[in-house]
Length: 119
Image (cartoon, rainbow, N blue to C red; front, side, top):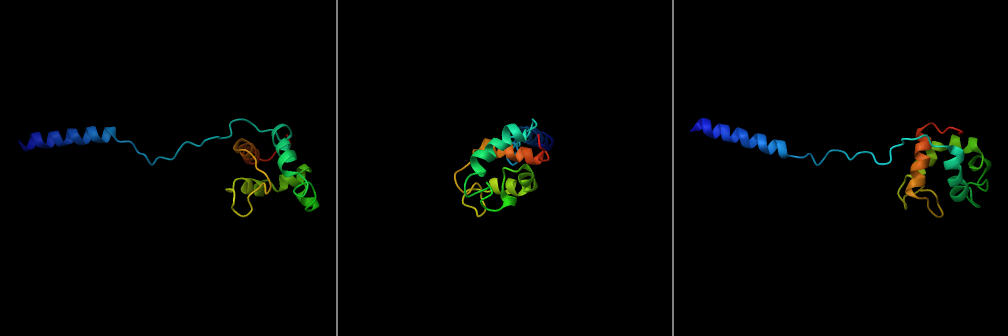
């Protein structure tokens, strides 16, 4: 009878372990960069409509923060990525006025992650 009990317990453990799901696995990365992002076609229009506006990054706050100049924007690309990915309400979140969409954020993040090319 002990053998039957052990065999039954082994079968039960096998069945239960085969049906378990690890609910703590990390979620797949959503919105991974799969295509090359063009600065001129995709990033620059976002800058022109949401960043380089009066009182912000159009040169009003200093020449080095004029995002209409590619080299200025590129040299600050990591800081831009950090600021646009901060939750709204967190100090330093950008844009300070208005908002950009999640898709626009992902576009800029991908461009930065791809090296911030002038393409």
